[in-house]
Every structure is written in C-alpha cells, then in structure tokens.
Length: 429
Image 1: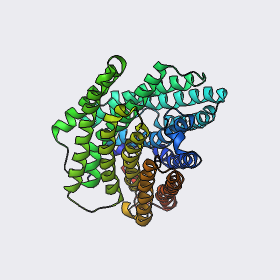
Image 2 (image 1 turned 90 degrees about the horizontal axis):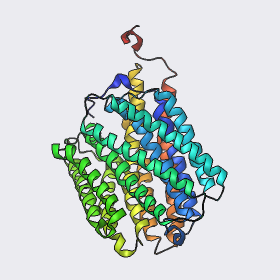
Image 3 (image 1 turned 90 degrees about the vertical axis):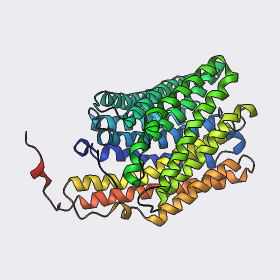
Image 4 (image 1 turned 135 degrees about the vertical axis):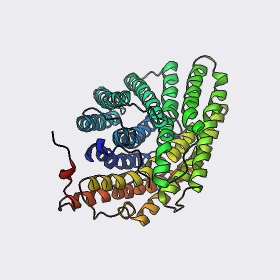
C-alpha cells in the first residue's frame, strides 16, 4: 500500500466517518426486508410507493451514508481539504439524515406530517454536510483531478438533493404531473452518473494506486473524463427537456466513458504490482461487469418504453455503485483503525488483512452478487424475489459484522497503553 501524498495530520476523529459506515448496512437490511414483503410486479414500476421507499432506503441510507462517511475522511486526508467543524457537522448531519430518512419512509405511506419532518431532516442534514465539504474544497491549493471530480460530484449531489426535496414535497399531493416525472428522471440519472459515478471515478484515481499498487491513470483520463461525462449529462438534460428523440446520443456519450472507465479498472487490476486477489478486487471486477451491462441496457431502454429501467437500476445502482462501496468499506474501515491507532503510538496492531474474516467476506460477496442476479430474473420468475431478498439481508448482516469487527479491535486496543508516547512529537501552543 502506498501512502504518499496523504495529509495525515488533518485526519478527523475516527467517530466522524465510522458512524456512517456502521449505520449503512442497517438500512441495507431494512431495504432487504421491504423487498422481501413486496412483489416483483409492483417493483417493476419505478413510480410505485414501494419502489420509491426501497430505492431511497438504499440510495440514502446505504450508499449516501457510505459516501458521506468516506468523504468526511478522504477530503482532509486524501486531498488536504479540512472540513470546518467536522465533528459537529458529521454528528448532527448524521442525526438529521437518519431521522429524515425514517420520517420519509413513514411519510410516503401517506402521513403528511412525517413527510414535512423528513424534508426538514434530509434538507438540513445533506446541505449541512455538502456545504461544509464545499467550503473545505474552496480552500484547496492543489486542484488535482481527484479534487475536481469530488467538487463536480458535490455539485451534482447538491442539485439532486434540491430536486429530491421538491419531489418529496410533491408527494403530499396525490396528483403527479408530467414535469414532476421529468424532474424525477433528472434526479435519478444525475444521482447515479453525476454524483455516484463521478465520485467513484475521481476517488479511484488515488485509491487504486494506493490500496492495490496499480498503475496510475493516464493524464487524459484524469484531466478529461469527468469533464466529458459532465458535458454528456448536461446534453442529456437539454435533450430530455426539448428534443427527447435525441437523448440516445447523450446516453451513448455518457455510457462510452463509463465503459472506458470499467475497462481501465479491469486492466489496471491485472497490472497491479502485487497481484494478490481478495474480495475487494472481486468487487471492483464485478462492478466493471455490471456497469458495462447496465450502461448498454440504459441506452436502449427508451425503445422498450422504459420496461427495463428497474433492471438498469439494479445493474448500475446495485452491481456497480453498491459493489464499489462495499469493496471500499473492506479497505477503508481496517485502514482507519490502523491509521488512527498508529497515530496514537500503538505499534502492536493487527494488519489490515487480519481485521476482517476473509471467509465471511467471501460469503458476503457471493450472497450479495447472487441476490443481484436474482433480483434481475425475479421480474420473470417472481418466486426469486423473496429468495434474493433473503440472500441480500444475510449479506447485509455479515457486512455489518465485518465492519464492527475492526471497530471492536480499535476499542480494545485503545484501553491499553501505547507503545510510544506520541505527545512528545506534538507541537505546543
């Protein structure tokens, strides 16, 4: 693992990101339970209440929490952007978003009071966190490709949060208009490709060489791809509003660069200097496959009257983004534990590979991938939905255990005396 370029002295307390990581699988489990008690015919409609509830339980409660937690740690350490009042912001944005999501789930079941409370919670939590990140990025001197990508993704994140709040408010009225459907389309596409996709691409510029000792990305990829994808997303927006027949060209443009990214990731993993395979590598490779398939299906979905849009969401949202998020959790959480303990003067620390049970992580990976495949085919074989939901729930339980295990190691070790007194190296005021 290469640690060059990390701003170690600016790291926030471990509690700031970890609270997000620990909570994410719980919402994943809730989503799995909701899927178990649903039926495939209802979930085929992206505008059914069940689909909306399940989608946002995953996107906000699972993906959103992991992304926010990761950014809380990565901004100061990876790109040198120190978030103002990071402990306060992380704690209270976490509380607001958690309560907001719970009230959202209850509110969408036709309880307007809960919907209004969810708007306050989600808007307050997300805007507090995103605003703090924007302020941090504004003060960065070295505007690297990773910083540009993260900044771009935060722009898209802020936009989709505003759209989401508007759409959530509109659900207090039972009549859904055509322009609301257009906003919902923009909200979902920009969330997947603009926020999630661009964030993953930008972070991978540093994460793949750091964690996997893979070759660095070429200059064109780092300097141009994020800009080209963003251009495609804005073209898709214009075509969606004024020339819907031309959206396929913008889709193909966006998909082209995500295919290129998927291929690049696969090749770089093949060329890493330490070709030791583990479950995180499996997740990156799986994500590349699902992204390629999902982007291809997304291009031509409109010719099938959006009949396969839910499958696209499973392939890209689940197979690509969730796979990357889980794979990163298996790297980031042990790294955080080692990183913080080492910084406090502890030398007798289990290695990162020893903090998580490898057999359990492999079982979790298999169950997760099988659940995704089952979800896709459940639209043709309905009985697979409950089986897949059960597999997904078990995978989330194992994931939660695997995340908590390194945290318990951290709590156990800090109760002992450090090997070195690091206070000797701290500067006095």
